[in-house]
Image (cartoon, rainbow, N blue to C red):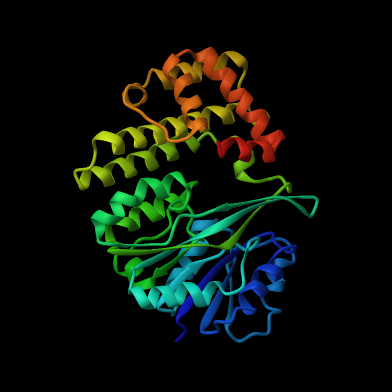
Length: 350
């Protein structure tokens, strides 16, 4: 049996699938299997899954489209490796990734390896920004150490994704932790659900994963989703419950979690500006008024801190509790985020 099972859901990626798979096949570590889950893809990527000749590649064709979480869960169920990795079919990994993460897992006997990644912005096939996301090398031994580091990893967006990690498979299967089906931000919920069962995490600062963001359109992250706020609030509650279980819901931990809650609210309010939201100006204002009157929002605003300049701007506007000022900020962020991605990423680095 292979040491690592690499699970790749496949849907409408005929332009990128070959690059993704070849980035794995060219690794200097060879003891792996690749599980391609064809999620009833309507393009030629479905056929491409069967054209790879390497005997380490398995292709599973689903009879109907079930979404990303369903595809990953099927991959988990058929995986035979000691460890599991998730890779999105339009992304890639850098040379030496598998040998380094596997060696780290073996040397530390950890349940999970977290590594850095590159956010690669691409337009018309050309890269115009490559932003590394990483944390310093560390070994978190015990759940208290993990809890103590969690907020830093969350704020760096290293906890949320599933694809910048190597998981010990038995931790997932023995605790029946699967990707939530029918939800967005499923990676975040999966990782938060898994955390209470993780006893040791190794962090590698190297950016091994290339997370591609292209101007191809049609992405759920580039359109209004009325359920987004519901799922973000669920993620926020799961995070706060985690710290409460360790009696850490006080001081800076509580304040920084409250900022994440506020940021989630603002993220949803920003999306009201998508054309497909169908919201009039008056409806946007009313939606903002409803959220800033929410008890949890009020509690968060009254006991909050942010560690970056961008976050401090968001908090300053939140504290006004003025729907019109908050609307102006959300509209401005929307215009920057979707009209000038490069500037938006620079802004977030302040």
